[in-house]
Image (cartoon, rainbow, N blue to C red):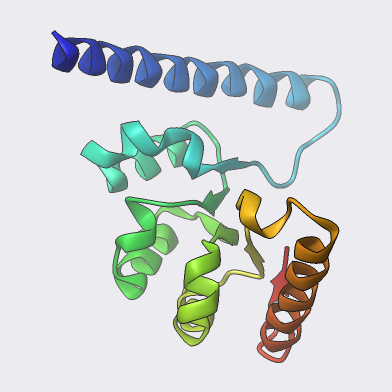
Length: 164
């Protein structure tokens, strides 16, 4: 019973995601007809993570077909793909990657790897989307976390990247 519910939830979630993509297509059309032309259209791939699990490259292809030109990487399956292979697919589809999500543990344990991945993918902004409670519950924790962020920012800046 639980398995069936999860599958249904995933199915409904996927439908909702692609429904949102269809609405985005309408937004593109309205922007074109209103005299304003949007130059860069992007989507955060974390919002499509469940759909992308089954077919990561196919998801990128569909996004490119409906008019997206930029994607923000965020988590699996894209975070675990080989960066040169992912870059080749993105280039083939005409998709740029101005930003990507990273996790705090990865920043602390593999900052050089994140820098390499960002450089291969053409990323400019390295974004930490979430800070755990144990790093922001007290003023002292916030101050310590801010110092750590300053270190990440300084290191990334030397490589032409911006920490967000």
